[in-house]
Length: 157
Image (cartoon, rainbow, N blue to C red; front, top):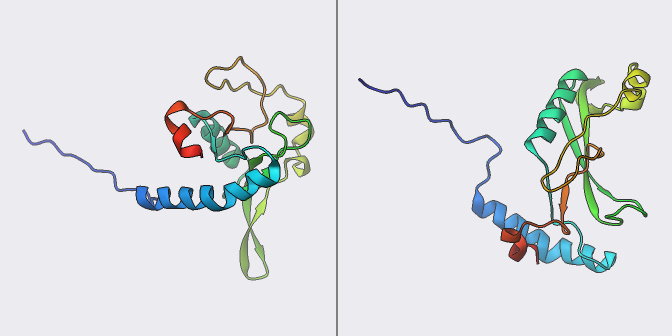
């Protein structure tokens, strides 16, 4: 009996390990050094997000009638445990037409008609490995540094 094997093709966004390593190296040897020097402490090299984060993000995109996400670079505010470090911020987007041009406009939850009802509800709790259950800002992943896995510590310099 012959078995049919289906091989999944690589995703369209795959750039390969050599390109990935080169881009990370370029960042760490150029921008990261400058950011760290300006900050006076190691800046963020990477951010880890759980699969659950992405599932919830996809659910939110669907709920909002969105067409994608925009990822922006930000900086944690004074008083935050990672004050001054780089962070990533995710905004759901919706397709809209500006004249004849298709754009992807950020969905601002505070401007959505159901915001008062949604914001009055208890938020879900995401548990990160090694942590007690806490409510986190959706955009907060696990930044490295300070939380760098032991097997990648050599890559964080």
